[in-house]
Image (cartoon, rainbow, N blue to C red):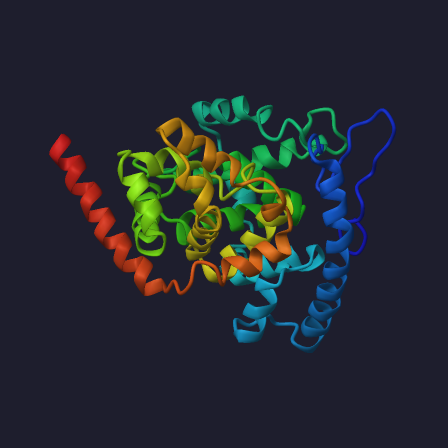
Length: 345
């Protein structure tokens, strides 16, 4: 990586092709390379504009200019800083000096340590930076972030999915303390109750997506209504992994730029864009396995690989989507889930 701009990935004869984040590219290497060749020019332009903006205003404020800049993509050299400020993580880090290190110095719960340790080798096996023999290996930083977070938030502790999120944060920040505070921003403020034992926030948002689809793509809403519980099958991984391993990495990082700046409604914009854009294919599904397969297919290919165009689409294709609308739907869906669950107990 040069000046935060991903370069064409190394392609050594006889070795795997590696992207700028350490991931091996097994499929569609030529498509990826073609996209990156064009995208590097976009990144260079964005990089110059961001550098100018941050020279003029070293203290990042939330305003319409910065929001527009974030939607157009944050260059890698500024990403950690913008995520930290936009999410409130920087404020928490400064308010709690030494707190992260103090968590690591505690006597650790053996069950927590064991659960995290089991997932270490499962975290990005196709990323050369996370291999135990890598120099330096990011596994130690990943383990520390998850361990500290497990002690910091005992209600959540550790659950699967968190390892991938922490891993992405470490790749970008290259700093375990910053990754810890970004993780805290995501799990306690941006996505409350996604990872709590009852996962009420996650269950709620799956149902909210179903309601939004009914409103914005009624034909798909009708199709999906034939299959009770279908949103859990097709969208739970989208939300719980924040699109990691679902969308290409450059696209995920662009989604995360907006997630840290604008909050969780961005996750719905991404889901709705994927669904609305691929409406004809989805409507051809004749069974539940067809539907599930179709939802797997719509996340890959040229549409999601071209992250710059895809991000423009998520703010136009689904139409208006206010925070007030989502909050209202969340209240309604949460209430229904709680009533159903209390009726079953």
